[in-house]
Length: 131
Image (tube, rainbow, N blue to C red; front, top):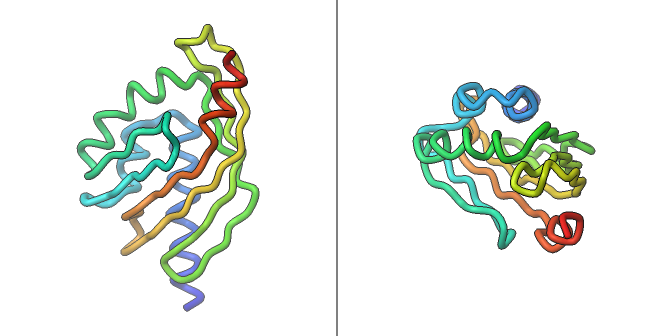
């Protein structure tokens, strides 16, 4: 079981590092072919499949200037993990105005790749900071 926990955490850390490096190809390489990216926020957009997710990453990384996710912890249970985070960015369409929000990712990992990411964050807080 210890190996699975380490593999799960390593897959998530690689994914977050790729996002923080703004490397769309490296981000996509961390997810499975049948990856599900599920957003619970009204501002988020869910994606299905690595190809659809990769196609959206370039625009996402361009819009969210200086995007950075800082994990506040890792709660790992086998192939599942919850990762509370602080996300900071400047939104290009809002004049690079800085935003800082807290959220939580829930991941599922299999064979070293992320198969599902559910993202919980408050879009109302983003709107408030951009107003």
